Length: 270
Image 1 (cartoon, one colour):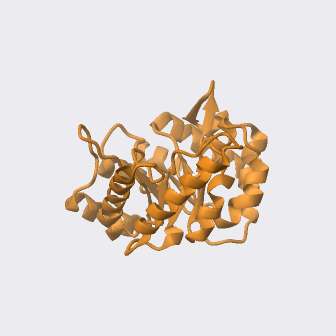
Image 2 (cartoon, one colour):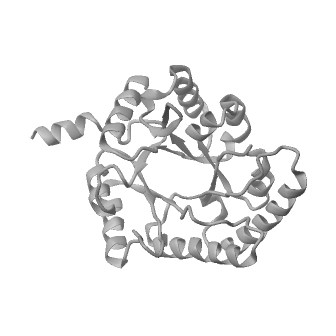
């Protein structure tokens, strides 16, 4: 009874003007135990998937079937974070081809879950605002890779390009050209000292997923209690005011303590 009461107390499922999510790594366990643990507390789970020569957590058919059943039973959606060790803008064609193949493999593996979004990092963006030539080479490579990824792939709007260390304007034309969506990672924006209000003005209309996490002593993915009150108020007010298709707000934290604390803060703020 105590466990059930605590879970109910920490649930914001279906209570907010957006779908509330968190990651599949709240418990130090595999995907199914995490989703089972979270299913009655949130609306969406970000499946953080990886594959390397040494480690892989890519789900097998049985796991996919279980995740699909949990989604049906608990009114859940999934966002799928595509692998981080890909470089779609590499100057080397072989690296781009391997990167596209890895992303497509994950998309094909999870398509039965009908993900609300696929989250994608476009690494390699020049940080020097004057490096126009480098940016042109990079974005040309990105165009080629993204087109290959979209061929016989998911609907373009389900691919969300995340805000990273470089100014998002570097990829904005690419996002628009391919009909993609935006993932506004609030922690990344703040950590790199970009103007959050300006980012919301420019990109919220095409944003499908928001990542929210705090920063402590230069380390991100902490509970959102580490965010300034005005930052949280700005994000929530803009999300509540925006007349746009349904969005997911993901508390992008990776342990129970940060998750519970983030829910407490979010409950107080709403």
